[in-house]
Each structure stands twice: as structure tokens, then as C-alpha cells.
Image 1 (cartoon, rainbow, N blue to C red):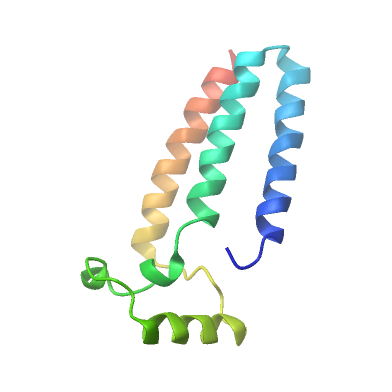
Image 2: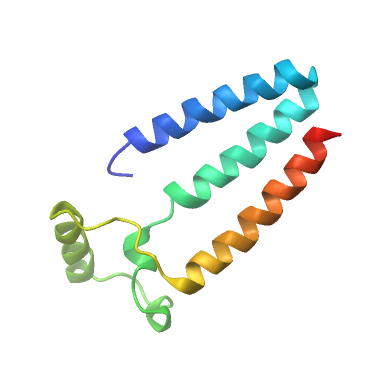
Length: 110
């Protein structure tokens, strides 16, 4: 990961949420569930190699070439967004994270 600031701030927010869950529920199990769901959520967004996944879907079976990685690095330094919005990616993320947040909320609110 080139910029650790996003990871650090995400982990600090996760720690604050874990503390709030612990204070409000007095349950170590619910704190640990919050930690696991939050950690997996952060890892799913911040850790993937977006240079690899920002290519055409049909090219995912082949390794990233040096030229593709160099052009991706150059484009992210020129101010382009690191995470490009693709409709299918957003639909999959919304479904997965929505289901995870729903299950977490049901567990924590009981």
C-alpha cells in the first residue's frame, strides 16, 4: 500500500467503534465480532492490488506487465483516483458489505 494514512485512519475509526460497542453492550463477543467485520471490511477496500483489478476483466488471468504497472503508478501520481468506480464492482461491494453490516447489526443489537 503506497499511502498508509488511509489504513491508519480506518483502523483508528474501527478502534473507536469497537470501544463504543463495548461500552454500550458490555459484551466482549460483540466487540470481537465488530473487530473481525471491520478488519475484513477495511482489508477488502484498502488492500487489494487495484493495478491488477483495474484492468479489463478478461485480463485478470494474466499477470500485470511492467508497462501496465508503470502506467498505473504514473496515472495515480497525476491526480487520478486510485479506486475507479465500476458498476459491477460497486454492486458486488454493496451486496457483500450490506449483508455483512446487516448480520453484524443483528448480532450487536440483540
